[in-house]
Amino acid sequence: MKKDIRYINTDGNNKDFIILCRELDQFLNQLVGGENNRAEYIPYNQLDDIHNVVLAYDGQFPVGCASFKQYIREKNQNNHIAEIKRVFVREQYRGFGISKELMNNLEIQAIKQGYKKLILESGESLIAAMNLYKRLGYQVIANYEPYVDMPKSICMEKVIGCYYYKKATIDDLEILVNSRIKVLRAANKLTENVDMSEVEIYSRTYYINSLTNDTHVAYLVYDGDKIIGTGGISFYQVMPTYHNASGKKAYIMNMYTHPDYRRRKIAFKMLDLLVEEAKSREIKQISLEATDEGKLLYKKYGFTQMENEWEFQSV
Image (cartoon, rainbow, N blue to C red; front, side, top):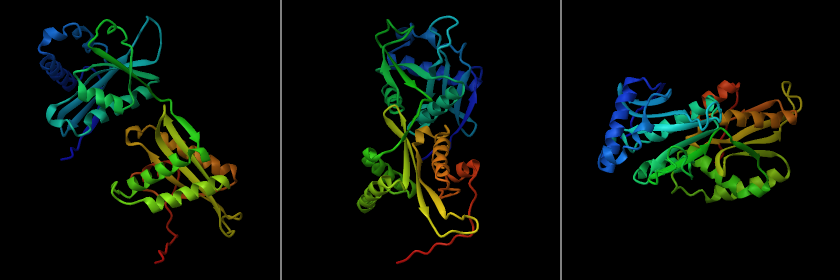
Protein backbone atom coordinates (compact mmCIF):
# COMPACT_ATOMS: atom_id res chain seq x y z
CA MET A 1 0.00 0.00 0.00
CA LYS A 2 1.33 3.43 -0.95
CA LYS A 3 1.85 5.73 2.00
CA ASP A 4 0.58 9.32 1.96
CA ILE A 5 3.58 10.97 3.58
CA ARG A 6 4.19 14.65 4.23
CA TYR A 7 7.59 16.25 4.82
CA ILE A 8 8.50 19.24 6.97
CA ASN A 9 11.71 21.22 7.49
CA THR A 10 12.76 21.82 11.07
CA ASP A 11 15.89 21.90 13.27
CA GLY A 12 17.82 19.69 15.66
CA ASN A 13 15.71 20.72 18.65
CA ASN A 14 12.57 19.11 17.28
CA LYS A 15 11.26 16.52 19.77
CA ASP A 16 10.21 14.07 17.07
CA PHE A 17 13.69 14.28 15.53
CA ILE A 18 15.29 13.51 18.89
CA ILE A 19 12.99 10.49 19.39
CA LEU A 20 13.76 9.14 15.91
CA CYS A 21 17.50 9.56 16.50
CA ARG A 22 17.21 7.48 19.67
CA GLU A 23 15.51 4.75 17.66
CA LEU A 24 18.25 5.01 15.05
CA ASP A 25 20.88 4.46 17.76
CA GLN A 26 18.99 1.42 19.02
CA PHE A 27 18.82 0.05 15.48
CA LEU A 28 22.57 0.56 14.97
CA ASN A 29 23.38 -1.01 18.35
CA GLN A 30 21.40 -4.10 17.40
CA LEU A 31 23.01 -4.23 13.97
CA VAL A 32 26.59 -4.26 15.27
CA GLY A 33 25.97 -6.37 18.37
CA GLY A 34 25.79 -3.73 21.07
CA GLU A 35 26.62 -0.10 21.83
CA ASN A 36 30.19 -0.94 22.82
CA ASN A 37 30.93 -2.01 19.25
CA ARG A 38 30.15 1.48 17.95
CA ALA A 39 31.39 3.53 20.90
CA GLU A 40 33.98 5.37 18.78
CA TYR A 41 31.21 6.69 16.48
CA ILE A 42 28.89 8.04 19.17
CA PRO A 43 30.73 11.36 19.75
CA TYR A 44 30.33 12.23 16.06
CA ASN A 45 26.57 11.67 15.99
CA GLN A 46 25.48 14.25 18.54
CA LEU A 47 22.74 16.72 17.62
CA ASP A 48 24.37 19.90 18.95
CA ASP A 49 25.48 21.32 15.59
CA ILE A 50 22.55 20.12 13.49
CA HIS A 51 20.32 22.97 12.35
CA ASN A 52 18.78 21.53 9.17
CA VAL A 53 16.40 18.60 9.56
CA VAL A 54 13.70 17.03 7.37
CA LEU A 55 11.02 14.90 9.03
CA ALA A 56 8.52 12.54 7.38
CA TYR A 57 5.04 12.13 8.85
CA ASP A 58 2.18 9.72 8.31
CA GLY A 59 -0.59 11.98 9.56
CA GLN A 60 0.76 13.22 12.90
CA PHE A 61 3.02 10.19 13.38
CA PRO A 62 6.75 10.78 12.72
CA VAL A 63 8.14 7.98 10.54
CA GLY A 64 11.55 9.17 9.33
CA CYS A 65 14.26 11.80 9.53
CA ALA A 66 17.39 13.09 7.85
CA SER A 67 19.63 16.07 8.51
CA PHE A 68 22.81 17.84 7.58
CA LYS A 69 25.30 20.17 9.21
CA GLN A 70 28.15 22.28 7.92
CA TYR A 71 31.38 20.35 7.58
CA ILE A 72 34.42 22.38 8.58
CA ARG A 73 37.86 21.06 7.77
CA GLU A 74 39.71 24.07 9.16
CA LYS A 75 38.60 26.86 11.43
CA ASN A 76 37.25 29.95 9.63
CA GLN A 77 37.34 28.12 6.28
CA ASN A 78 34.17 28.34 4.21
CA ASN A 79 34.34 25.30 1.95
CA HIS A 80 30.61 24.97 1.13
CA ILE A 81 30.42 21.33 2.26
CA ALA A 82 27.53 19.87 4.25
CA GLU A 83 27.61 16.50 6.01
CA ILE A 84 24.53 14.26 5.95
CA LYS A 85 23.66 12.91 9.39
CA ARG A 86 20.99 10.82 11.11
CA VAL A 87 19.08 9.27 8.19
CA PHE A 88 16.43 6.90 9.51
CA VAL A 89 13.00 5.46 8.65
CA ARG A 90 10.96 3.35 11.05
CA GLU A 91 10.92 -0.31 10.01
CA GLN A 92 7.23 -0.58 9.12
CA TYR A 93 7.59 2.38 6.74
CA ARG A 94 10.58 1.14 4.77
CA GLY A 95 10.17 0.25 1.13
CA PHE A 96 7.94 3.21 0.26
CA GLY A 97 10.63 5.59 -1.02
CA ILE A 98 10.61 7.73 2.12
CA SER A 99 14.39 7.72 2.55
CA LYS A 100 14.82 8.91 -1.01
CA GLU A 101 12.38 11.77 -0.47
CA LEU A 102 14.10 12.74 2.76
CA MET A 103 17.46 12.86 0.98
CA ASN A 104 16.02 14.82 -1.94
CA ASN A 105 14.49 17.37 0.42
CA LEU A 106 17.81 17.73 2.22
CA GLU A 107 19.62 18.29 -1.07
CA ILE A 108 17.19 21.04 -2.05
CA GLN A 109 17.76 22.79 1.28
CA ALA A 110 21.53 22.48 0.92
CA ILE A 111 21.47 23.96 -2.58
CA LYS A 112 19.34 26.88 -1.39
CA GLN A 113 21.90 27.58 1.35
CA GLY A 114 24.78 27.66 -1.12
CA TYR A 115 26.41 24.31 -0.41
CA LYS A 116 28.28 22.76 -3.34
CA LYS A 117 28.94 19.28 -2.00
CA LEU A 118 27.32 16.75 0.33
CA ILE A 119 29.34 14.13 2.19
CA LEU A 120 28.31 11.27 4.46
CA GLU A 121 29.65 8.32 6.40
CA SER A 122 28.09 4.87 6.14
CA GLY A 123 29.25 1.26 6.40
CA GLU A 124 29.16 -2.14 4.71
CA SER A 125 26.58 -3.43 7.19
CA LEU A 126 24.11 -0.72 6.06
CA ILE A 127 23.41 -2.38 2.72
CA ALA A 128 20.07 -0.71 1.97
CA ALA A 129 21.44 2.72 2.84
CA MET A 130 24.53 2.24 0.69
CA ASN A 131 22.39 1.19 -2.28
CA LEU A 132 20.17 4.24 -1.82
CA TYR A 133 23.10 6.65 -1.73
CA LYS A 134 24.57 5.14 -4.89
CA ARG A 135 21.23 5.45 -6.71
CA LEU A 136 21.09 9.09 -5.69
CA GLY A 137 24.49 9.77 -7.24
CA TYR A 138 26.85 9.51 -4.26
CA GLN A 139 30.31 8.09 -4.91
CA VAL A 140 32.72 6.42 -2.52
CA ILE A 141 35.67 8.59 -1.52
CA ALA A 142 38.63 8.32 0.85
CA ASN A 143 37.47 8.53 4.45
CA TYR A 144 37.40 12.10 5.72
CA GLU A 145 38.00 13.26 9.28
CA PRO A 146 37.13 11.96 11.82
CA TYR A 147 36.71 8.61 10.02
CA VAL A 148 40.17 8.38 8.47
CA ASP A 149 41.35 5.66 10.85
CA MET A 150 38.02 3.82 11.07
CA PRO A 151 38.22 0.94 8.54
CA LYS A 152 34.57 -0.03 9.02
CA SER A 153 33.47 3.37 7.72
CA ILE A 154 32.68 4.06 4.08
CA CYS A 155 32.55 7.73 3.14
CA MET A 156 30.74 9.13 0.12
CA GLU A 157 30.18 12.46 -1.59
CA LYS A 158 27.96 14.14 -4.16
CA VAL A 159 28.50 17.44 -5.94
CA ILE A 160 25.18 19.30 -5.98
CA GLY A 161 23.63 22.19 -7.86
CA CYS A 162 26.04 21.93 -10.82
CA TYR A 163 23.86 20.76 -13.67
CA TYR A 164 25.07 21.00 -17.25
CA TYR A 165 22.63 21.95 -20.01
CA LYS A 166 23.85 20.68 -23.36
CA LYS A 167 22.39 21.73 -26.71
CA ALA A 168 22.00 18.43 -28.53
CA THR A 169 23.53 17.66 -31.91
CA ILE A 170 23.12 14.80 -34.36
CA ASP A 171 25.82 12.98 -32.38
CA ASP A 172 23.28 12.70 -29.54
CA LEU A 173 20.73 10.99 -31.80
CA GLU A 174 20.34 7.75 -29.86
CA ILE A 175 20.18 9.59 -26.52
CA LEU A 176 17.43 11.83 -27.91
CA VAL A 177 15.43 8.90 -29.27
CA ASN A 178 15.72 6.93 -26.04
CA SER A 179 14.72 9.95 -23.96
CA ARG A 180 11.73 10.58 -26.24
CA ILE A 181 10.46 7.04 -25.71
CA LYS A 182 10.96 7.39 -21.97
CA VAL A 183 8.99 10.65 -21.91
CA LEU A 184 6.14 9.13 -23.91
CA ARG A 185 5.94 6.14 -21.59
CA ALA A 186 5.84 8.41 -18.54
CA ALA A 187 3.32 10.88 -19.99
CA ASN A 188 0.98 8.13 -21.17
CA LYS A 189 1.57 5.83 -18.19
CA LEU A 190 2.77 3.02 -20.45
CA THR A 191 4.56 -0.05 -19.13
CA GLU A 192 7.75 -1.43 -20.63
CA ASN A 193 5.68 -4.16 -22.28
CA VAL A 194 3.97 -1.69 -24.63
CA ASP A 195 5.56 -1.85 -28.08
CA MET A 196 7.06 1.53 -29.05
CA SER A 197 9.18 0.32 -31.95
CA GLU A 198 7.21 2.22 -34.60
CA VAL A 199 7.34 5.46 -32.60
CA GLU A 200 11.08 4.90 -32.13
CA ILE A 201 11.64 4.60 -35.89
CA TYR A 202 9.67 7.75 -36.66
CA SER A 203 11.34 9.64 -33.79
CA ARG A 204 14.78 8.78 -35.13
CA THR A 205 13.81 10.00 -38.61
CA TYR A 206 12.33 13.16 -37.14
CA TYR A 207 15.46 14.03 -35.19
CA ILE A 208 17.73 13.36 -38.18
CA ASN A 209 15.69 15.65 -40.43
CA SER A 210 14.83 18.40 -37.95
CA LEU A 211 18.30 18.74 -36.45
CA THR A 212 19.76 18.88 -39.95
CA ASN A 213 17.42 21.58 -41.23
CA ASP A 214 17.30 23.48 -37.92
CA THR A 215 13.56 23.10 -37.34
CA HIS A 216 14.05 21.59 -33.90
CA VAL A 217 16.33 22.33 -30.95
CA ALA A 218 16.79 19.91 -28.06
CA TYR A 219 18.59 20.22 -24.75
CA LEU A 220 19.88 17.51 -22.42
CA VAL A 221 20.51 18.15 -18.72
CA TYR A 222 23.34 16.27 -17.03
CA ASP A 223 24.29 15.69 -13.42
CA GLY A 224 27.81 14.45 -13.98
CA ASP A 225 27.43 11.78 -16.68
CA LYS A 226 23.78 11.06 -15.79
CA ILE A 227 20.97 12.52 -17.92
CA ILE A 228 18.38 14.01 -15.57
CA GLY A 229 16.26 16.14 -17.90
CA THR A 230 15.27 16.88 -21.48
CA GLY A 231 13.38 19.48 -23.44
CA GLY A 232 12.81 20.41 -27.06
CA ILE A 233 11.22 23.04 -29.25
CA SER A 234 10.04 22.69 -32.86
CA PHE A 235 9.67 25.59 -35.30
CA TYR A 236 7.07 25.78 -38.05
CA GLN A 237 5.08 28.29 -40.08
CA VAL A 238 1.37 28.80 -40.76
CA MET A 239 -0.50 31.38 -42.81
CA PRO A 240 0.00 34.94 -41.55
CA THR A 241 -2.73 36.26 -39.23
CA TYR A 242 -3.62 39.60 -37.72
CA HIS A 243 -2.05 38.59 -34.40
CA ASN A 244 0.93 36.82 -36.00
CA ALA A 245 1.93 38.54 -39.23
CA SER A 246 4.94 36.31 -39.84
CA GLY A 247 3.05 33.08 -39.26
CA LYS A 248 6.04 31.74 -37.35
CA LYS A 249 5.24 29.47 -34.43
CA ALA A 250 7.06 27.20 -31.99
CA TYR A 251 5.95 24.16 -30.06
CA ILE A 252 7.65 22.97 -26.87
CA MET A 253 7.71 19.24 -26.26
CA ASN A 254 9.59 16.39 -24.61
CA MET A 255 9.84 18.23 -21.29
CA TYR A 256 11.03 15.79 -18.65
CA THR A 257 12.89 15.86 -15.35
CA HIS A 258 13.95 12.70 -13.54
CA PRO A 259 11.74 12.27 -10.43
CA ASP A 260 14.76 12.46 -8.11
CA TYR A 261 15.61 15.94 -9.45
CA ARG A 262 12.22 17.64 -9.47
CA ARG A 263 11.46 20.87 -7.57
CA ARG A 264 14.96 22.22 -8.28
CA LYS A 265 13.97 24.65 -11.08
CA ILE A 266 15.60 22.44 -13.71
CA ALA A 267 12.49 22.55 -15.90
CA PHE A 268 12.23 26.31 -15.36
CA LYS A 269 15.79 26.76 -16.62
CA MET A 270 14.97 24.48 -19.57
CA LEU A 271 12.03 26.71 -20.48
CA ASP A 272 14.35 29.74 -20.38
CA LEU A 273 16.64 28.08 -22.94
CA LEU A 274 13.83 26.96 -25.22
CA VAL A 275 12.00 30.30 -25.14
CA GLU A 276 15.27 32.07 -25.92
CA GLU A 277 15.70 29.82 -28.97
CA ALA A 278 12.28 30.96 -30.19
CA LYS A 279 13.02 34.62 -29.52
CA SER A 280 16.28 34.39 -31.48
CA ARG A 281 14.17 33.35 -34.48
CA GLU A 282 11.72 36.22 -33.89
CA ILE A 283 8.97 33.79 -32.95
CA LYS A 284 6.42 35.24 -30.56
CA GLN A 285 3.82 32.47 -30.38
CA ILE A 286 4.95 29.44 -28.38
CA SER A 287 2.56 26.66 -27.42
CA LEU A 288 2.75 23.29 -25.68
CA GLU A 289 0.66 20.44 -24.36
CA ALA A 290 0.76 20.03 -20.58
CA THR A 291 0.30 17.00 -18.37
CA ASP A 292 -1.51 17.49 -15.07
CA GLU A 293 1.86 17.49 -13.29
CA GLY A 294 3.25 20.22 -15.57
CA LYS A 295 0.34 22.67 -15.59
CA LEU A 296 1.42 24.56 -12.47
CA LEU A 297 4.97 24.99 -13.79
CA TYR A 298 3.81 26.40 -17.13
CA LYS A 299 1.31 28.71 -15.44
CA LYS A 300 4.03 30.07 -13.15
CA TYR A 301 6.29 30.62 -16.14
CA GLY A 302 3.63 32.67 -17.92
CA PHE A 303 1.83 30.28 -20.26
CA THR A 304 -1.96 30.67 -20.47
CA GLN A 305 -4.45 27.95 -21.32
CA MET A 306 -5.96 28.20 -24.82
CA GLU A 307 -9.69 27.83 -25.37
CA ASN A 308 -10.25 28.44 -29.09
CA GLU A 309 -8.35 25.59 -30.72
CA TRP A 310 -10.07 22.39 -31.86
CA GLU A 311 -8.63 19.07 -32.94
CA PHE A 312 -9.86 16.39 -35.30
CA GLN A 313 -8.49 12.86 -35.12
CA SER A 314 -8.67 11.27 -38.59
CA VAL A 315 -9.18 7.53 -38.82
